[in-house]
Length: 184
Image (cartoon, rainbow, N blue to C red):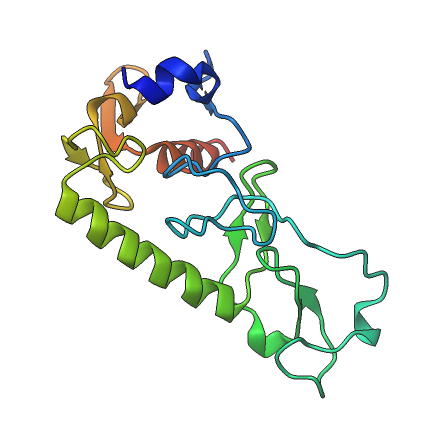
């Protein structure tokens, strides 16, 4: 156990009986960096927080113009940056960590998140350390996102009734998202 965990035990994930892992919502699930109030993604690793921060109270989107195309009426709001968007600015949907429902992400946020993640992954791989515990050497990579993890950060999922199959290791983000997709 690292000194950070000894000083702040509230950041420990707790595995529930139903398989989900409860985590503190004030931190990124990938790197445990405290969330920034400006964006819905982590500035350190590019992971989506799973819930939007700055969605403004817009009752009629047809009266609001797209943030990137001022001559075009908006149809949606980006769940990451809160900007009004037209149809051409919508990237692929992300899924809310809290509700499990998809929300819109703009192309600009998608590119930014991808670039941050690429740089973060390069740094973690060069240091050969866990993404949440920089002082601990990584022992595996998540089978979904390829992020380096230590022994304590690896989660697995067991499926099957008569023949048990175990998949993993997963990082906490991929573990919870894989469980939520399987349970729909």
